[in-house]
Amino acid sequence: MKRRSLLAGAGAVAAAPLIDAPTAHAAQAVSSRKVMTGAEVLAKDDWRALSGQKVGVISNPTGILPDFTHLVDTMHASGKVNIVAVFGPEHGFRGSAQAGGSEGDHVDPRTGIMVYDAYGANADKLVKLYTQSGVETVVFDIQDVGARFYTYIWTMFEAMLAAVRTGARFVVLDRPNPVGGYARGPMLKPGYTSGVGKKEIIQQHGMTVGELARMFNAEYLPLEPNGGRLKELKVIEAKNWKRDQLYDDTGLTWVMPSPNMPTPDTALLYPGLCLFEATNMSEGRGTTRPFELIGAPYVDYKWAQALQTKNIPGVAFREAYFTPTISKNANVLCGGVQVQITDPHRVEAITAATHMIVEARKLYPEFTWRAETPPGRWIDLLTGSDRFRTMLLADATAEQIVAAWKSETDAWTARRAKYLLYKGAHR
Image (cartoon, rainbow, N blue to C red; front, side, top):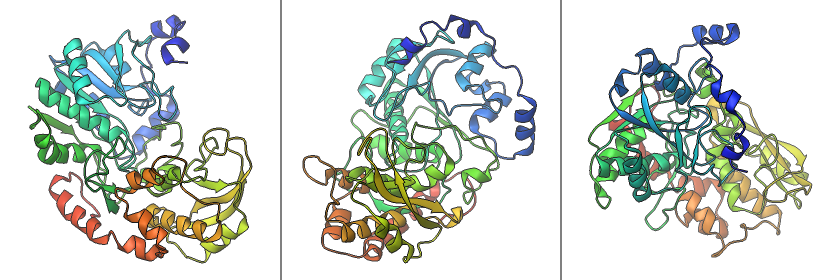
């Protein structure tokens, strides 16, 4: 059921006043933390960067301010920002849709603002929506999780290209990268672009959305058909964030960016453990610990036992049994592991996932890629080429597979340097 149906009778909610001040608990949390999001910086400046503009906002439930009100709700209630449209990405503006879903076009019952479905929308569609709604400035405020295949950064890319073509300003309200500023993993190669990787960036990019926007504007948008650089790109930076800080170090409140991203720990493992989406194993969707619980009906204690001997930095493996309620192996008892984070600052999720896949293939003849045509295409798209898959099938060790992309990671780290906005670790 679409959100507009769920909220059809929400007139009382629409008429209710916004929260004017944080609760005592929230106020104490706000006063004690140091990191400020770009949205908070903009609000404290009384929305001046948006003054006199017809504004379109791309956001989801993560676009909150310190008092837990949504950016759009607060801007609308202020009367100082002329919001003419909201654009909802995957899962929707209010977050009512599951993976691969959206809320459709509808009028938001709280604000009366038209919400357009932007999930999977390319620049051509967004140009029409910008023109239809009269947008002059596009605002992007979504909490990313730092992985190439998390779709929000590609929503931003298409939105930026549409802004180039319509002459709209583009404003990014930056938020910390929850897995820090470290770059890890393989580079996307030509021929392997898709909705989970539209341009050549590495698997765990180690950048904020504001930094990525600067790179997109300089390197990628000018190469697109009817492309070029934005008329104006403004990144309102998060304050006091350092690149070696993880989300739990920021003092910010975690809001689920998507239904299967419940905690900062999930985000920390996701850049690697998401690779299990390409296999016939459950990646824990339909459990309380997605991307931490991994398993299948054919898995036994031997997998956890083998992985524990690998001494992979930052993680340990607990034998676990679970029954997913959705997705692969739904309502079937699965054996497997729970990946336990022992040192968040040492976690290398892609390395951990590589070891897990190598060991699973050794132990279980039933282990294979998920059903699709051609077989293994999804793992190629997630890793950015066929190298991971072909090395695995050639019985390469996990160490050999990880070593194969080191030069790509090093080159990316050097290339991205001029777009970085925050100090701290650059590895």
